Image (cartoon, rainbow, N blue to C red; front, side):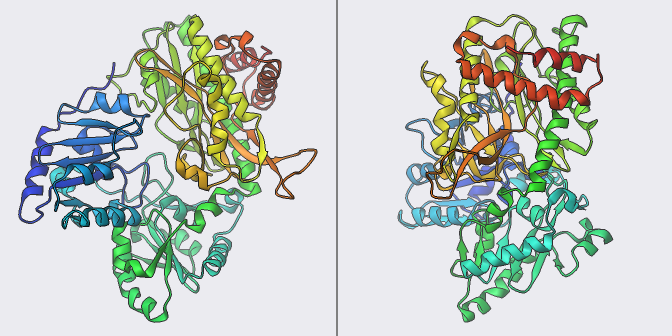
Length: 614
């Protein structure tokens, strides 16, 4: 059963009253998805776009005017957004020809001279300046930073409280490097960039830098903080109550300041930067509010050096990713062994719901060594729900599992030694010939990408067609990227690397030590969804020659250890090499995962059968 639309009439009415009031006097108000740190996933207190619109997907931007409410989101969420939003909203399908971006919408649809309001902490500095200049050019229009978030006013006392959970230390046996050594490397980058310091606002960068983790955002082991690293000092801006004596000792030599103090302290620093003719460096996630506090002339906005330092995993982190995926594979084998038994022999057909089985998978994961929890809300989807790319089942409206329909499960775990992300598509009954052909073409694309050997720093943009070609040959495709980076006990989505057709992937070549997912798919609206996803390491390839002149070649090492259902494979569509790949992959899964399972158990027997040769 699809989610029901949320009635947003009252909250939109109140928001428009505020917009029209003399205190604000704005023609439009923008409500982004992000928090003050430009996070993809946000805490409940920062889910403003979901509150005002009803749509709770991870990507989207709402624009509200006096008589219209428009939601801009990408192809992953077209179905979900339409199902969750009521008739007050117009869905703007980003990426579809003729559909403007929300920034273009503001420029083209508002009268000249319009004032557009936004919370300046929720917009990146570069985007804020770009929009402000575009509006200024239209007869004095303007982008207005409104410090008191208007959605928060409408939300009132019902808005969830900001998390105040404790942060904790992640031991160097998992990180492979002391945080002081990381700071040394950051300072070396500052020397190269001729910058006086670095403003750090991305939460995963702060957690990585200090070897700390938290739980302020569900599924993401991060905490609310800012940091400032200069040539001689390091300051962490964080709620003092989140730090205990052990963490204070760990941070010896680091100045601890209140979370919001960074705004005033950057403003105070601006005059000395002008006098010394120096500037601070900040990553692209720095907010418009932070940039305005410091003064844009005192700031260089570029890629944060931490972004790449974090993306290039050391050998301890790479081995941690291998090991946590083996344990994760054991949890998945227990799960699918249990689920198959329930469906075929214990009345699970039309009895177990999508949430029921997702909860069971979480139980199996949490039994594994070093498991802290999930890396995102499990996408447990049956039949038509599988075509909703980032579907999130809710108890009460979730569908019942059906032996006659496809089942797509996209899930992952957070472990002290790594983060996992895996998708498998199964059918517990008899799949149709069309479903098997679609599945096999997705598998062919997955294999083609996995087998690729390519020069170091080849972009994911260039590799993306390998995964799509078998679908393109039939006139099919999918509306999402083919791969994203994965953190090391950090965010499940990590940049700057990725595989897909985004322009941003043109500027980041793949390097040894990166992580990346391989996840082509195919989706038929109202029918089924297919996705096959492995998490991979980018590692050096042993080639006979080296035409690169020393840069070398790379390949992918799949660390996900979960069988791909052979029932859904049309063997006749596979080449000899593709069949060999599947058999070799399954042999590796059996060798690594079976020792963690009890011989004769449902999971053991399921794994044994599913990893046998095609």
